[in-house]
Image (cartoon, rainbow, N blue to C red):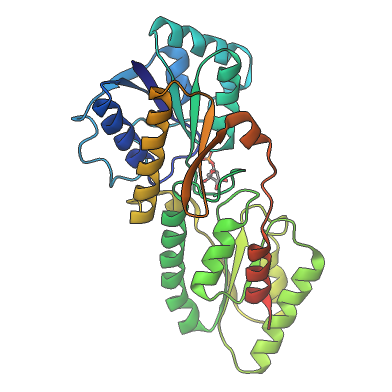
Length: 320
Ligand code: F6P
């Protein structure tokens, strides 16, 4: 058997651990593995390298992805997937494993419609994919964000300021919510918040100030509509010295945490085993601590709802 693997979308710590596990498990089954470079671009243009135990030695602890990644515009058209299919047929592959976020999975669904057996593995720091409780990279990202914010707070406390920190995560507030909890933030603003919440935030700072608190930490999710105006509003209404900081791409970097390496490895093993057993079109996920696999298209179509626990955590952080 011969299978392909690629990483696509934003890189996430732990992607290399998946690649490593895939190659190791495939080698055990005597399956050849071809790694396509720069996401779907590599599949379209036939840019690949054969992977073996030597090529994945010592990569389990590396951040980023050794296959490199990209957001492939051409895959949004009909032509991209058709060109990819040509490469796939020419190489006579028996399946493809794609590692990435929901954009990557939408690409994979197109390939399944052209008859390519695909397995999707969720790899994104955002933890925003439907039908899985976890995406590879999330744990490392929130650990990095927590560490960076701890550093920021040394300065904030010394000056008696309010720091507004924007964290990544697109429309998902998972990084914001969990980082806010881990750093003891005074308030978290998540996508979909309203003006009422802004007032609640200002009132909380005013109230705490009267009680003698001198420093404040506000975490803002990337997808918040008011993320660029909130610092000014706080300064104007509370008369506190406010600074803001965008953590940015540092959140995607660094060695993956042990949790990310472990889940990544288990997902990689499951993906190869499915292809070996002639399974196809599955998405690997993690639910209640267990690695699961679900129909790729159905899993994609499920709603990614905010669970009740998250709402409770948000209330806890933002209460007085
Ligand atoms: O999906 C991961 C992520 O880091 C998001 O949190 C962020 O909005 C986006 O990727 C940034 O994407 P790009 O690398 O294309 O700028």
